[in-house]
Length: 468
Image (cartoon, rainbow, N blue to C red; front, side, top):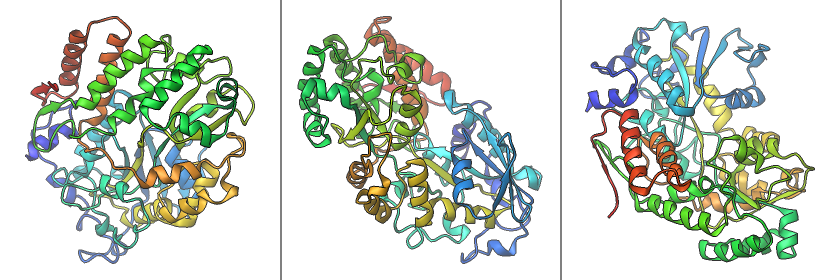
């Protein structure tokens, strides 16, 4: 089992050894936190460099906003200096195509023998692959209790599904997040008024309340020359979040494609053929998709969590504020989430503990992040308050308070079963069937292409099973 965990952690450089040494790399235990039965982080001399691995500067901005020990950050954003002279070094690699994981995995494999200032101290993961790093056998993400953080008391206000997501199979929490990422339907007010005679979120919510209803609504939009969504990729997360079984079960080497994924393929084909989607927009994260968010677009709505509105829709919109609004989605879903992990072997356990508490636990800090960055943050009581507080309204959304709609979705999310292979499976299944939906290959060829691509990404996978 240990060798299997290693193979997952370093797909690009298959390892024959184990990661057991990671936990004994710093001259004492694995950096136990103050208050923990296994030692005290405060008793360990802290290093002078805190190495944090991430895929963009989002987390750095949150740290700068709420961690009181921040003094300054270099103009290029690579080094943040704290008041005590300690430097945070930000190691950033792109998330796409597994590059971030590859670079992180390479560093984790060297953790046991790395010099103190070269050790990974804190790293981030996404929901799509958090399971890979919280695996107890991997021993790369410390239990929060070893830092002196008690999940039952210190993190009691977090949404329960985020706590489960950040835990290993034994229920030991090995990460924490400032984000909760419930998704909504975000729609153009001007199109709503033209087609439906109103842009009221409650009334629009009734027209998109479930898949059968939204299909009828799509016909109304089509009759007026509009698309309901831009791309078949826009709906994927709603289907993917409702799978019944994980892509790969623990200890197995078989990918099981859930029926919900095939439902997405079939429904996407139906929607494309019916003209409810723009055939010119092929997937997401490309120029055509970005342009579909502009004022010249005929696309009525997108499906986004809070970060999608702030980081994706808002920068791509070329009109005035107030043109968009939010309402309930046809199906509750979660998209994304950045988890923080204290790395086993860190020589900065006390600093890491402070950062995790400041950014993911302190309610006042979380509310500040929500107000300043429009993040839906991981505090149940805080988000309930924000949903009723007009000061959390959004100028971009025409004065609407999106937290009023985010909060009830978040409280009802049941996270889909996760596996260490999720990011690759999610990316590659969409790539393979995008070719099918675009008419470039037939259905069986799309299946074959997925099987080939996923085995190249994960050489330890031996079989792909499709629903009958």
